[in-house]
Length: 244
Image (cartoon, rainbow, N blue to C red; front, side):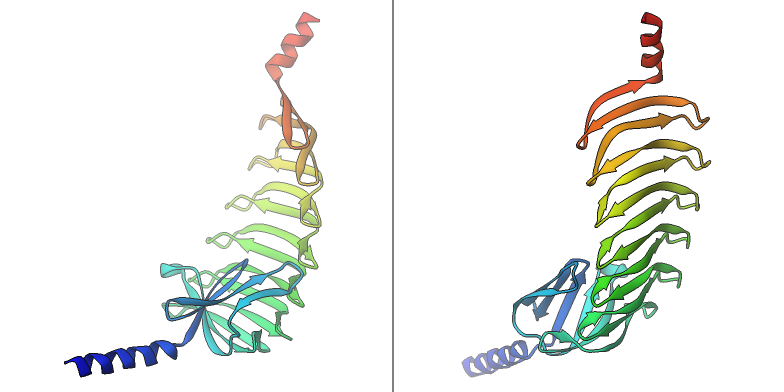
């Protein structure tokens, strides 16, 4: 009996020692596992570089994003911590195509697209040497555009727009190197402006004007470095004018 237990233990050790490497990925990076043990961790930087900790990864690695029914996977060909050139197709566990991306010189490069299970586009855009570059879009599950904007060297730059899930414009603002700067507008579904003001280095700055859906003034908020210092409603403004 003792001999049998020793043999079983030896077999289990052999299997665990040569278990296939798998990975779990998100927008910020990836973790690699041999069995249940984490053996390496990668951090994806905005400039396209990757910070690597742990073991050197080699071989065909099955990489997962998400959990449960929404989980998708692909198999990366990795040599000495470098994802080899090629087009990688992502798949849902239930067999539907989930997306496609291209690697060149170890980095994402060119167009990428991800899909909902029914085939509608979830998100799409472009990478250049590992950094998002060019137009990028996100979509609601009903196929309606949710967000759109432009990246340059991995950072949001220029006008960015958000939409309601029924297609109407919801918010519009401007980015400079991933920070909101300049004019901001929020809309009702009818297209009437709800709020407008200015951002400076990702913080609200100055007066934000509020409107009713009819277009009439609803009040003014005053902000300094992202902190609200005053909030005047229409009624308060009218009261002040009467007192004067």
